[in-house]
Amino acid sequence: MFDRDSCAAQGVAMPVIETEQSSDVFLRADSITLTYQDGRNLVYALREVSLDIGDGEFVGILGPSGSGKTSLLYALSGIRLPATGSVYLNGEAINSPGFPREAVRRRSFGFIFQQYFLINYLNVLQNIVVGAVRENAESKARARELAAGLGLSGMEHRKPYELSAGQRQRVAIARAVINEPLIVLADEPTANLDHATGAPVMQLLTENLGQSALVVVSHDETVLEGADSLYRMWDGELTRLR
Figure 1 (cartoon, rainbow, N blue to C red):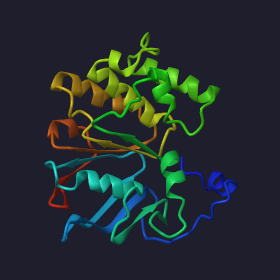
Figure 2: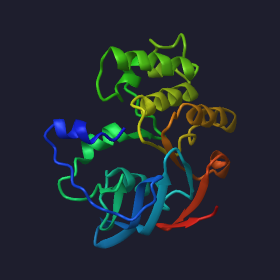
Figure 3: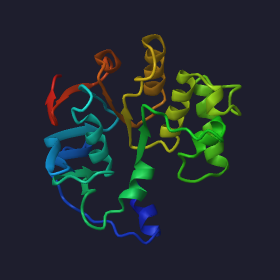
């Protein structure tokens, strides 16, 4: 969870910025625009995007490749800073000067990428623990618990190349949720899986979230069937569908 005291203990000042938002909204994008330079051309990845994410909410974002879905995840987590607008976490602007983005991102966000990014020379348990804030007896015990819950019992000491695509994705899920983050961001989490494998992976993901909110971006609407709210991303613009 987002812990101001732990950040303060590291000697990091925490800015306080007041925003207007309801008590159940803890992550908010307020009219953010994200650009990048392509040669001499200025490309708009996001255009005036606003989004509220509530505690424990499952948000689905549908859109084709190149529509800005991944850019939105980067902006929400502070990996990329918007050219205009702000992103607020618990009422504090994460793109403000002095905000400890890296420390907060590691503690408060979990990431699931379509390419998994597992470390080939580490086994299943070691790859899960890589996502932990601290590697200790507690994190190792939680890694074993997650591996069992995700159907990886008996595979704890296998390397990624000894696993199927679905099993590797389960390891990625465990790594993302090991810190019990405020929010899990999933970028096309079933893109490399067939439908028969992808549907159980999504079920396992939602079942293992605990109290975390979930944002899933995908080109496949069936992946987002269980979402509490659904949006469409097109050419950097976000529209609510339901």
